[in-house]
Image 1: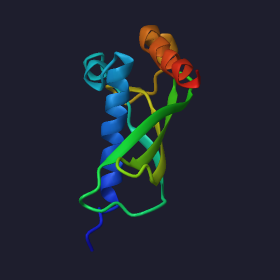
Image 2 (image 1 turned 180 degrees about the horizontal axis):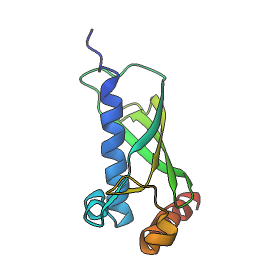
Image 3 (image 1 turned 30 degrees about the vertical axis):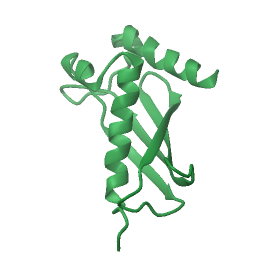
Image 4 (image 1 turned 180 degrees about the vertical axis):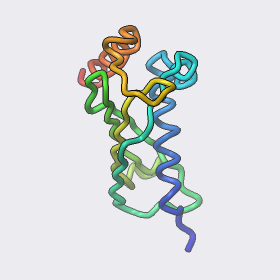
Length: 125
């Protein structure tokens, strides 16, 4: 059909979220080294127009909610050449220790908690 399969959008979202964390100064690798995992709780995608194999997509990420226990990231995917909106998406995550128990970054890792709040503040400016 010449269009990108819908499952690829989820992979792109994951890559964009990893990039957001790098920009935040605390990579996913650093979180794993601190024995923090952040599984996906839910994903929503609203496809606005098709992405073709030859298209280049720009993904803007934004932390829309964060409370130390859960994180919500919004994604806006646009065509690099035309600026046309292709997809709007949201992913929700929680934070767990290696044993799989929920943790509060605010209480257990205040330096990471501060970085998430700083990222939210920067996006609102």
